[in-house]
Every structure is written in structure tokens, then in C-alpha cells.
Amino acid sequence: MIDSGKETAEFSLDDKHGLRKMARALSSETRLTILETLQSGSRSIGELSEELQIPMSIVSTSVSILEESGLIIAKNKSQERGMLKLCSPSVSQVIFNLNNIGSVETDETPQSLTMSMPVGCYTDAQNITPTCGMCNEYSIIGEKDNPLCFFHPDRFQAQRVWFHSGFLEYRFSFAFMYDITLKWLEISFETCSEAPMYRDPWKSDISVFVNDKKLGIFESPCDCGGARGVLTPSWNSILSTQYGFLITWRLDESGTYLDGIRTSRLTISDIRFSDLPYISVKIGVAEDAVHLGGREFVRG
Image (cartoon, rainbow, N blue to C red):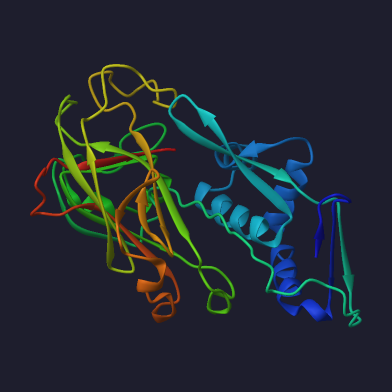
């Protein structure tokens, strides 16, 4: 049980699921360091990574576990080009009562879970074609226009990836995944078309799949360039892509939605989440797309 008014998290043997989540969250030196750092003020995942000298992928995973346990809260802050996720502590003390007190909330209480995945932490890169590449905050990773660079060890630090066609697969998993029933799912990312340099208009059909079920297509109108984005690194030429469009796919019992507009009758009940120990999300451009122009993620 988490009493946000008193900023106290209290657990007993009547809530074994909550005990396991909290114990897991507190079992890592990295997560304890993040909790200690947040005591002095809210920070984004990028700021935590830089301040603690920890890879962003590890920080992102640790933040998700801390958020799932209720120890921190992450809120999206609107910026000129997308959303910034700020993390803050949500409790000041944790109480473990190892007696069956019979008054603790059960797992039947509805919960939500937010997970962030760095763009370079994909599991698989399928049928990637040039133009393609990736970069971090400071430079290009590997070689431009070489699909093999998508398996470069430094890809986990990527802040932006681009390609003409193909798909990236991301796998999201968490503890006790089989114990939950999904009522809705939202997927947000920043994206645009991919053209040599940048072009407007330059349409691109960017498809999204969840566990191999197609949610639909976002028709990107252009490759965004010509004006520097807020997070665009200084070394990146103004003649190349600068930012993208922040879009959100939602899947629930009533259908599939793109930025609040219903796009299909596919519901969350149509996807068999129990078949896999993770949720697979594939994003990319099919070879037979009507508007085959590539796509690009940028940090959001």
C-alpha cells in the first residue's frame, strides 16, 4: 500500500506481490543511488545518466523498476520538440510488516506502468536499407549507409536512427508480467520521414506492430529540417534532419487510436500477450509501402 498523502509505502505478507516489487526495487546499488540523487530535485533520464556516469539504457531500466514499485513518479513535461520525462521521489519511508495484518490493498487495485526505451536499445533490426545510420549526442555511430552498423556495440547510446526501409523491434518486459491483465496500451515516439538531407514534402508510411499485429500507419508529411531543434546537437548540420513529430498510438477495448483518432477495430483483446514473455513493438517502413521514403526516430 502506498499512502501518497503521508508519503509512506507500507507492505505486509498479505501483499506478497507488492513486497516482491519493493524488495526488487531496493536490491540494486544503482537504483539506491538514483533514489539518493533524486532527493535533491527532479531529473530526467538523460541528466541522471550524465550525473551518475551510468549508461542511459541502465538508468531507463532502473527508473522503470523504481516507478513500478511506487518509489518514484515520472511526469512528462512538454517542450518545444516533444516531451521530457522528469523523475521525482514519491515516498519518504518504506515500512515492511511481516505479519498478516489483513488490511493491505490487493493486486486487484488498477495500476499503470510507464516504461522508457532508448532508441538504440532495439532487439532486432530487420531488412534495413540505405540511406541509413545512427548517431549519439556527439557523433555518427559506425558508418553511414551501412546496414551492418545497426548491430554496432555502441548502438545502445544512439539518440537518433534513420533508414529508408526496414523495421526495428523493441521488446518490453517486466517482473510478474503473467500476473497482469492489460486493459490498454500506449506507445509514444518521435518520428519523421527520411530523405537525403531533408525534404518537405516527403511522405513516408511508418507502420507499427504489437506482437506482430499491425496497429496502423502514420503518414509522415516530411523530413523535418531547415530549423534547428531544441535537442539537436551543435555538430549536426542544419541541412539535415533536425526533429520529428511526437505521435501516440493507443490500443484498448474499443479499438486502435492514433493521436486520439480511431484508426481500426483492432482491440487489446485481439492480441495474445500471454504467448510471449515480453511485448514486441516493431516500428518501420515496409518494402511495399505506398510512400516508401524511410523513417527516423529522434530523442523524445
